[in-house]
Length: 179
Image 1 (cartoon, rainbow, N blue to C red):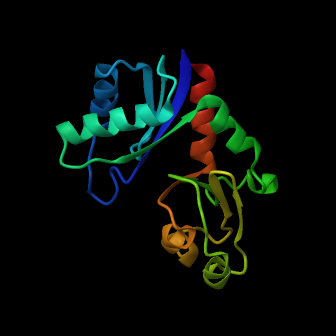
Image 2 (image 1 turned 45 degrees about the horizontal axis):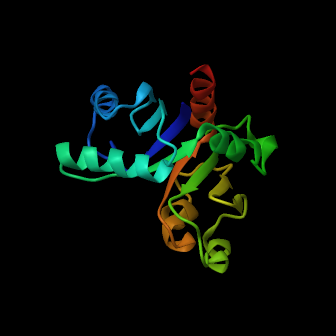
């Protein structure tokens, strides 16, 4: 039995694509996932499954939601070990204490040609970033609310992403380790 982390893109944001976490947990249990738990309303779910293919899990979850709701969210699934590796690979360990300003953007697919020049043009001087494997790390000391980079990240990377701040990352890790 494998422990997985599901990150939902674009649910419960700005009054759109609303799913109560209790309903989402129930829906996931209905498709056979075990020990389902969630953290905050933005769609962070930890569960266990005998399914070995994360892509198949993502498709099953997305299809189940589409059947019940008016939308089909993109779901990124990581095995617990992969999620922990992304955390351990953080290139800005000194920023981990500033957990609301350190973010990880998970990539929905591999990047073929990110617009690194465009990133450099729009990022604030204080912002630091690094693209590693299937994650884009961003340290934004002035916050992401006014960051031009954050508002254009999907276009500049060339793939959809879903971001989590370091505080959320730590909580997800804790929940996954407790499972």
